[in-house]
Structure formats: structure tokens, C-alpha cells
Amino acid sequence: MLINELPDDCLLAIFDRLNNLYYLMACYKVCHKWSPLIAQRIKKVKYFLDYYAYTFAHSPAHSPDYSHDYVFYRDRDPIDLAGPRTLFPNLIVAEFSDSFSVKVKFEDIVAFVRNHESLKGIITSSSGIMEEYCDKLEMLASDSIKSWILMNYSSLKQLALFGGTLHNLERAAHYLPNLERLHTLFYDSYHNGPVWEKLKVVELATTPDSSCEIFYGFQFMDSCPNLQSAHISVISGALFVDETLKQASLQDLVIDFYYNGQIWNDLKRTLMKYPNLKHLSLRSPKYMTDEHIKQLVNMLPNLVIFDVSRCGGVTQRAADYVKDYCKRNGRSTKFYFNGNRHEIQLDWPWLSTKIEKISRGFDFMKHCFLKDFYNLSYFLVPIDY
Image (cartoon, rainbow, N blue to C red; front, side, top):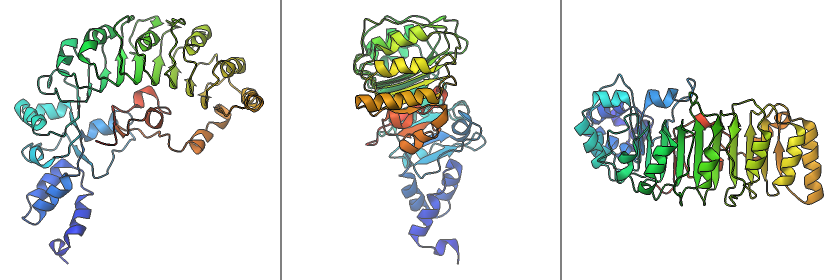
């Protein structure tokens, strides 16, 4: 049987397995029978990404998503936007990597963006390349961005920056009234700026080359009155903490310590600011002991998940204490340490450890809680997109 003798639904099933832009465009040009089928397949595409950047951004062993709503391009392939410009009517996220920007004319990229009314997010390593044409965007991931560039991004809800300063964010705050999620690496040492009313998720880390001796990320969080979730990576030897400011809305918190010094008092003062925490993960502090766990369990009465599985100094003794304490006080805290770390995914199978650029669903617990900062997704794409 010749391939063109297959019924259309069989051909469509085959085309759904094609995720390479070059192959799809080649198939589109084969014949009059294939063209409408390829056009139908490409209507399913929501994410247009660089294959190599996707594969190697986080882990060399990571393979891209091969579901039909992804299409990838490779730097070795010729890129012709004449087809995709009209064939991606439901595109949500597009990535313009360095290799893409070198091979494609700027005016063609602009036309691509303008012709995709459905486009909600852009990933780019060229921070200023699209600032005049992206006022409709709700998601942006980029290298360091100058504050004036964000003047055109008033509709932005998610922002991922891979280098910058809290000072620039402070200056840009009034341009971003609708921001709900911020993911950023920063290297400066102070924030005392405006209130971020709509921020629900904050993911903060100081850059490895930062000279900051004090971590000011929690001060930034103080300016987010409706914050629900935070993922914090600390390499500094001390935390700036204002314990007079409580944050009753925060429910999910991950703190990863890369510094091995003794900052228990700072940590304790920090956690006292968040009395309604339900999900807490503390990672890497070698000084964390069973006695510290006892204090925290008494201090945080609403904990549902308490994960210290990456704290080598916590033992079965702490687990027994938590179990007995919860039984005596009618609490249902699930406690995880190195001895039972495998149980967390058995108890909460919906918590994902999958490394991916795009996660579907604006859900911090599902897509962020179990991951390291550098493996977090660029965007948490709402299900209704």
C-alpha cells in the first residue's frame, strides 16, 4: 500500500508525531492531499521552541516534549517563517533563541509576532529585540531587561529574568500592575520599593557571582501583600529579616541554602513571619538538627507538608517526635527527612519533578515545590489558554 492510500485520520496520526518545523514544512509542500492535513496538524501547536535550548537548558539528559502541541526548530535547519506565520493560529509561546535571531530577519520575527493574535508569551535571549511589538504579552522570559523596556508590558502576568537588579525591578513596578509571577536571578543588595499588589508567586535567587553578604529576598517579599508561594535560593551568609511584618497569605515556601554557615536564628525569625504556612521545604543547611525541627513544628501549626529530606543532620528521632506531636495535638503534618524521602511522591503523586520550560497550569505546588530553582519552568501556562 502506498502512503497516500492511507485514510486521512491515519495520516493525521502520523503527522501528529512530527515535531520538527523543517519536516512539517517539507511535508506541507509535498502534495495537495498533505497540505490541508499538515495545516490541520499545525493548528494544534501551542509552543514553538528551540530544540537544543529546550534539551540542554537544564540537563543534557533531558528530552523535549513530543506531544502534538509542541513544534521545535534546530539551528542547523533552514527557518522560513512564511509558512508558520499563517499556520500557527493557536500559538501561545514562541522562543527566539540566538540561533533563530541570526538566521531570521528581524522584520520577519516582528511579522510573526504581529500575525499571531493568540500569542501570550515569548522566550528570548535578546532583551530589547521585541519591546516595541509585545504590548499584548502576558508572559516574558529574557536576560536582564532595562526598566524602560517594560513600559510596554502593562499586561504582563509572568516575568522570568536571568540576571538583573532589584533596583531595576523597583523602577519598573508601576509598569507591571498585573504581574502575578516573578522568577529572577539578581545581584544587588537592597529593595525598599513599591507594593506589588498582584504578585502571587515569587522565585528569587542571588547570582553565583553576587558579592552580597546579606540576602534581601525576604524584604522584597514583604512588599507583596498577597503572596501565596515562594521559591528562594540563598548563597549569602545572613538574611535580612523584618519580623514585625507578618505575611498571612503565604502558604507554600521552599528555601534552598547554598551557604553552610550558622544562620539558624535568621531562619527562625524569617519563618515566624509566615504563620499560615501549609507546605515548607528546607534544603541543604547542614546545621539543621532534630532540635530545630521540634521548634519549627511548634511554631508552624498549619503545616501539611514539612520536607527536610535534603538536610543531612535530621534523623529518625525528629520524625518520631513530629509523629507523636501531631497525634497529641490533632494535627496531620506529613514529615519527610532523608530516611523516608521516597514517600513524598507516593503520598503526593501530582507533585511533578519533570524538567520542562513550559508547565501547563498555574500551580506552584504541582510544578515548583519539588524542583530546584534552576529547574523551574519559565512559564506556568494557565489551563484555559
